Image (tube, rainbow, N blue to C red):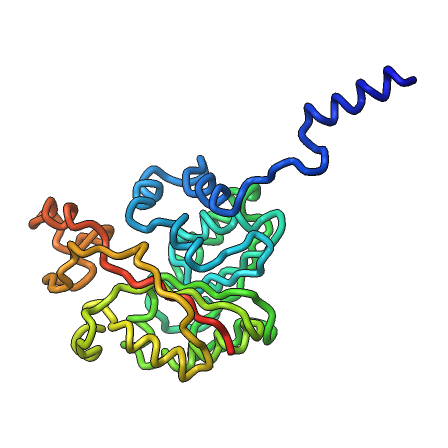
Length: 273
């Protein structure tokens, strides 16, 4: 009997289930997800521009949080967040509300592609929640105070340009728990520049975002340079869309813009007051 108990204990040790076993860190989980086989080579190639480990570390992401990603588009960051949060937390994507008519065609297309991505890979996406959200027609992101963190990547210029940033930030404030977090990554205009001039080109001054967020009830707690790119001069013929991944000029000066890389971006963390 004693010999049998020793064998069983040895087996538990080999299986790695004894108390005190080291679990992967959150940055380690992010790195594993960003290099995962579920991601295309093209999306993995953008890791060097989008810096998911540094970005999500700057936001203080924990794997037991309830996190809402706003307008994930093709799901570049969703591919990283879903595996990290799958076991201990919850990811909710707020995609476009396709029940609303007369939206730009790309919204219906991107939403369906995202749903198809989820259906095709339940091992990564079977626990992802979906909220359909097309402000101002759909302003309900869910129950008030129901998420720990809202994340939005490269969306603020569009909301400011459409004149709906105040309403959207109010929606964020409602759905985030008191003391919860808002992480914003956005193409960065030069300090002191006029947002009316820069926003149509995709760039926003940091002061503009900070003013809008503070008016909505958030406080800036940190700013990271993890997504900074000093090579981005912000004066491109087709705005930020001149740069990769859009490369709106096609073959024209493509090597030049590939050398610059993706945009100079601010990475801002706000706390919900």
